Length: 360
Ligand SMILES: Nc1ncnc2c1ncn2[C@@H]1O[C@H](COP(=O)(O)OP(=O)(O)O)[C@@H](O)[C@H]1O
Ligand SMILES: N[C@@H](CCC(=O)OP(=O)(O)O)C(=O)O
Image (cartoon, rainbow, N blue to C red; front, top):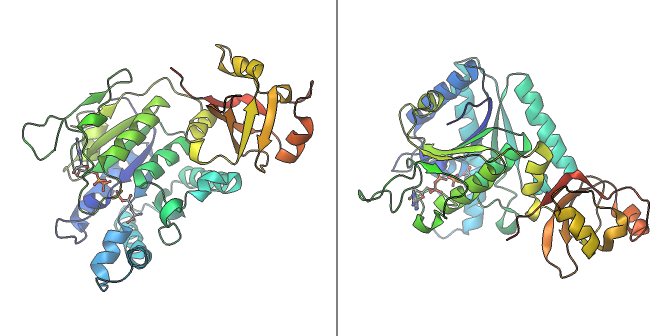
């Protein structure tokens, strides 16, 4: 395990609930105390916490036959207040101020929302305030939803350029089979060149979880590829965060690759968040995929789709429609359309804001 200065800690619903579904306040308090321990040792922490639905479900009984989406909205909106109040009460005993940030997938797509969110998180951290992030479950239904908070945590980690992401769940990490089966072994390290470990993971999830271990693995892998070390560990373990600080934690550790810089980390998550599409010719493709990458100039552009503004994410395709990568627009679609195919024009995508997909 490597040292960490800026980390995102994600706590799954199951860590905060007992087997009978009631909130596990004792566990929560212990985690709060350990987060405080990390902060007091100079680490900056952003907390992504699930638990709104679980806290709401416990407090508000609803008829069995009520529409499941409505049920989730009622439980999330009532439960989030309980969840955040509980955090505030526990952190207050340590004189630690906290902030609540509720986000949607859309906030990561819209450049202005994204920057507002990023600036806010950074400002909170610089003032010694702990940001506690959750999905705004009342407005995010079906396709607007994050796969789960593991996805939200990995987006947040890329956004703030964190060096570490910890996903706390109710098992010690990824096992070679069902974690309840004594013959299953914990995979302690996932290196980049390792064969896929996803074959070991079943789609089953814990009683209150949403995404399961498969999304945890996918998000962990992606973040590690971007240079963020990822730890999947058991949030029910007595001294989980202290053991992490002492580098003796039993967990699955994802070795980070060479760090991509902040903008590229953000772009790497952009495949679901692009606003426009740009098709480029063969010459432009060769320079974007060459060893020394160049910026994308209008002369290499064949076609533009969608209305975009400066700063929006664009998907880049080659002439055969293959997806090549993602980039950040240096100017709007209105201006770009006037410059298509022209020489001596400013790059539409600067190479610092270009992310080329791995190709075989
Ligand atoms: N190979 C595996 N190793 C570990 N856990 C697994 C594996 N396959 C499936 N799981 C399940 O994934 C669950 C954790 O995911 P999830 O329920 O989404 O938790 P959380 O609420 O913390 O996000 C574990 O409780 C376990 O049942
Ligand atoms: N936003 C939801 C959590 C959704 C979710 O991803 O849950 P989990 O799989 O337990 O991390 C809530 O607060 O209940």
